[in-house]
Length: 390
Length: 221
Image (cartoon, rainbow over all chains, first blue to last red):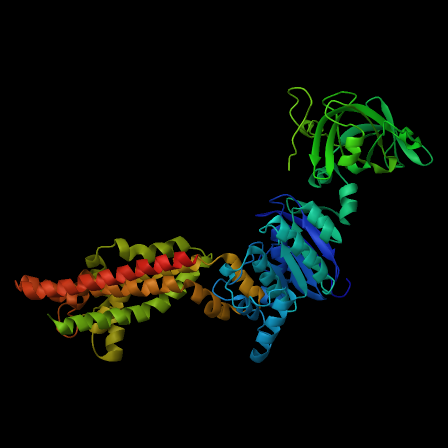
């Protein structure tokens, strides 16, 4: 294991099932993502030493923090982990500066105040030193909690949904600040979040968890674009999932039969000819054909359909297309609103798109939940332009 | 008005509170956060004096304090006097009778501290002892103060256990509650009335203080 890095392996069948294994290098930010109850917070608490799993080992900075087999389980005081709790857990009877001083027990009493003020300055709270937590806004409390977590010069920084309790504007600002702050920190940072966008924005790598089990890890956009299984695909909100059959492997691509179409997909010889697969494509890889100016690229996996739903979202529009008019076969794509306007796209209009070959992602066959295939608005009534759903 | 009885009652109430509150903090600390076998039984024993008739508690304490019992014998061997019908005996009885009044408010006070706040204190590197002094005690103090006031007020008015264990020895075991009974029996309505009014005022002030404290705590959030 590299110096200064964190490695975690936790296994237990109950009371909270865990089968998690991952590592995080110094200076790296790792996001643990998964639905509620997937064990993200439990894993973070286990690293900090405030949750005691039945089996596993945790190493950080060359030290063994937990090794159940060897009977090692360091108390939280001895682990030097900085944890920002979801609700911040500030000491309600101590003002901001004393909250930070509480974590400076390793310094001489005379040096603590100066260091605490320095940390408050680092999180832009100078002037609010003597406010009690209840006199601070959510965002300010979060900064005090972050400063307190950093006060002990931790060997790992753990963030438990640190932005969930603040408004959208504050969240954006705090996220940017964290992105700046982390460049100064040469320790592993583990971020728990259920917000995929946040993971993509902040983290170098993400680990997808379900029921305490690590399903896949990698750079966020890799995991989101190339989920290993259908299960991961659903957890990372990968839309456009279908069944198909491998028909041929050519020199540079694989041919996939799907609903009367033969699609070109990236060469995937691991799937035998005739085998059934799941496949998917991200909305960003579906390119709308311009009506006024057909182009050469339109020969790549062309698909036709009718727009079932047209939802403008700010500068973009989410479009659900019923392939060949089949309301049970829906393709979701996203495109800039000005492109949609220029092409006169609205509910009910005809549409032709290209499924970019490199965007088609194959996964092992698993039954598709019909509700996924049919996800989208109710089929009752005629297609209509709907109001934005934000 | 029996001033010596009032003074004795106040002395007993203060001594009981001073002895019992630290003990209650230790017990409440274990009950609030530790998990151990037989916890429900311990909680039941703690609450028992609430429902037990004072005479029953007094009877068992008297039997325990008798020079023929091992505890009574031991105490007599060390001090040369008996526990029964003495101030020391009264104090022990009072501590036992007041356990629920002390433990329960302290336990509620400690339980009101969010688990994450204690965990955050550990992660700040604070030892359990330091967490207790710097975090738990300051946050649970309304509960601790409530316990002290309740014990004080309840001891001041305790009658059954005192009569069983202490009897009615002026200056030694005759508390104000016993003195009221004594004066009422002697048809001395003036003295009984004055002492009753004194106790009523003290009780009202104590309970009023507890409620005020609770409201102040809630206002602070």
